Image (cartoon, rainbow, N blue to C red; front, side, top):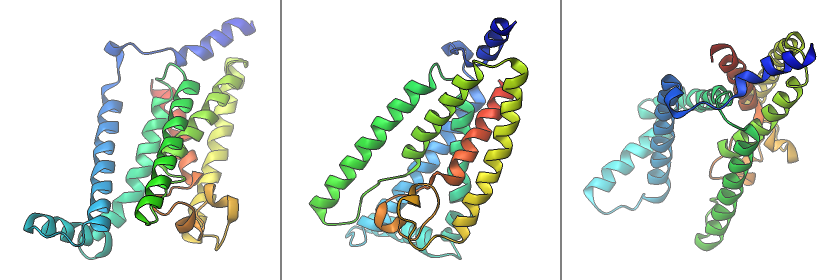
Length: 234
């Protein structure tokens, strides 16, 4: 009886052909990537182009400055939407984990990109003498998320359908509680969390990953909840 159950559990992880792509997931992912590009463009203009000489760049710098510093104008938009958009991006990545041929390969690829990003930004920091290191951001988080969900799938593939569903419920409860922990430390950062800086928001994050930073919590919770949502929907 266990073998047929295992096959049923595994059917949700089969590869989708290009003609079977889920358009709404692709649309959401594309929209959120556009936000990421816009947000990073604003940061680069604000950080690097303060001494722009042309009228066009001066105007763009003023927009970027308002986006990052003025809470009554564009800054209010950035403050209200930034974390929500980042978590939505992680949530959609979780949904996509059910449409991936292999979350292990996905995790390895993301890890390679994350390590390359860290190496390049660290080298650039030494060249220009500015704190541009990105040691832990959304790419690093997604790599760990994919590894975690790969091992969850590995476990569930060995269980009956009923036991696998029980694991889903348990995961939902655990990761909702972990999201609460993550949001608590976002509101009350640890002054110097040491190695915990990769797990929750800490005061030493500006030294650890000054150019861009995202702790694992609550992002990991959004990924897992997205993965469970995708399993139900698709």
